[in-house]
Length: 69
Image (cartoon, rainbow, N blue to C red; front, side, top):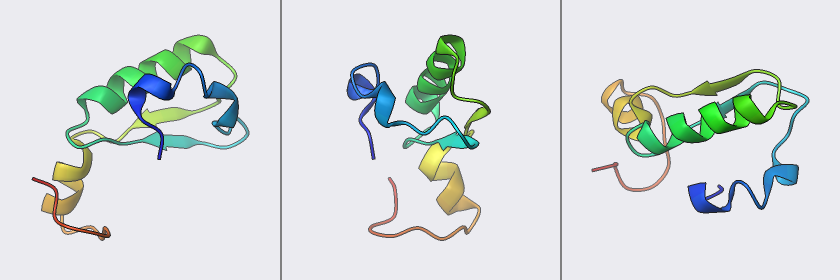
């Protein structure tokens, strides 16, 4: 887990040798992060999970913890 505000400073911790899925609660912040990572280069395939955790849970996909609200 990496908060959006920390992504630029911790970019070297993000793997660049495999596809990367970025997710947040609704998909908005993760979309901006995915776009930024793609623009920076060096991260291969970067995808945003459209709709975020809300859509994930609504689709009945597994997650840990309390349901997203």
